[in-house]
Length: 190
Ligand code: 5GP
Image (cartoon, rainbow, N blue to C red; front, side):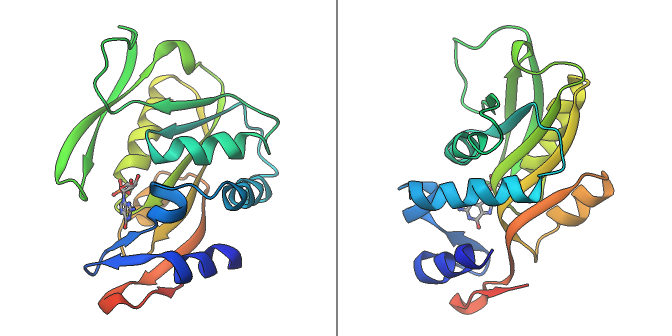
């Protein structure tokens, strides 16, 4: 997606040789008009899939999924919780996700009320790196005996192993921008 590549080049900041910061439009401040274009593009990429629900993970996925939903006929958006909460139902689907950026494993949960057998679920997230978050979300869908209709990612770090792990699982994966490398502060796309 050309517009996204331009946005990354103009506004993205590289941290080290493997982290891209996009705080000013995606991860902290939100550019709503731009996120609307992202939502529209996800609809184009998954136009042939029947989508009953969108599943994402807090926190950054929520804005993306909410805006995208409006292009999928306002389907419900469910966000998996990674922050411990006393308010969460007792009956949950739960999986463990290792975060390389945080260097720790955390538990990700969705109430059984919000994922049902046979539903077609589109998984959306901001970044794909080593694929752990996306695989964790897929595991929650599998536990519910629902179907993964596809996985949509805003920015894929093509130099990490996420894509190959997800392709092994046989899911349709669409990334709106794929980074080839971000070495020495220089961003290149695939
Ligand atoms: P994975 O589970 O695929 O290894 O990593 C994906 C998750 O880690 C994303 O949900 C995102 O929150 C975070 N992440 C991984 N790499 C980056 C990065 O370069 N920049 C930002 N902003 N987040 C990242």
